[in-house]
Amino acid sequence: MSVANLSIVSTGLVTSVGFTAAASCAAIRAKVSNPTQTHFKSNGSEPIMGHQVFLDRAWTGRLKLAKMAALAIEDCLVNIPRGKWPQIPAFICVAERDRPGRFVGLDDHLLHEIEAALDINLSEQSIVIPHGRTSFGIALAWARTLLEEETVPAVLVAAADSLLAWPTLKAYLPMDRLLTKENSNGFMPGEGATAVLLDANADDERLRVIGLGYGMEPAAIGTELPLRADGLTTAIKNALTDAECELHELDFRITDLSGEQYYFKEAALALGRIVRVHKEEFDVWHPAECIGEVGAVAGLAALVLADSACRKGYAPGLGILCHAAIDSGERAAAVLRYGSG
Image 1 (cartoon, rainbow, N blue to C red):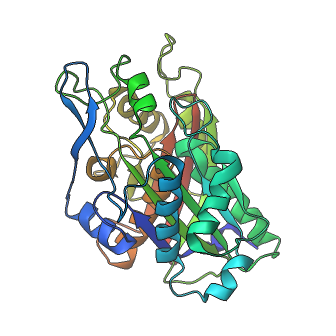
Image 2 (cartoon, rainbow, N blue to C red; image 1 turned 30 degrees about the horizontal axis):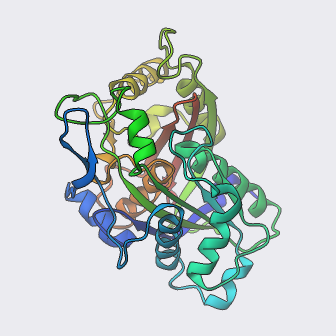
């Protein structure tokens, strides 16, 4: 079985601009943004703005992550009989273990809390993947392995995260990492959840994951080493090799870029080191401008947006590069192609 047969069946996405993939993607396409004042204050005593998800109850912390994840999973699996859900392994992407303010107990309890919110038991093969924004790449690789072994009919990759917690914001404020009136070089925190159902059917009307790659950046953000984008360059090159294609054969990018100059510079450097054939246009989409910095949700959100854009015909082309990065230096990239194009 070929990696080309790792294809997207359906998606779910819960954000500050929509509670379903259809609603969120439509809002992102229209450049709709919905930041609101949080009850947290910046150093200048101004309220910190954030992309908050307002549920029917004021859930907080890990429980809110479980509720958002359950909504995204239900959106994704709406056409799958509930009796079949326990047969589908679920890989749940969450914040990296060293991220400031990470909710306690994610690795041990979140999966069970999602099951409780869904009122259903997930497959015993279900696990939590704690690698933040790069979790999506690891989850896709594991999904590919399971599907190639033909041990399961499908795999669910989901994510839930929130940076709207005071321990997290309190850590990022003195680093000048947050977007405030006093600092333009920062991100606006957000939260949300997403889910993608994958199977091994080579369908011409599906978005397929055809290449995956990883890298490690030695000059991670906050270090004094010169940034050469070694990690992201390696990740993208590996994904292209896996996909057996060249960068100029792709049409656009969807990334986790959320406002910090470091990551924009890294993406530009990596692109400059890889491109060998001139392209008139190679647009970059960054959903964070509409939904904020959503941590582990960002990588999968790129896949959901790519799927919607291709299915509805507003994508600039059928070949897509997605990439993501976390502060510790991990980098992940994926090459996508819609149908046989």
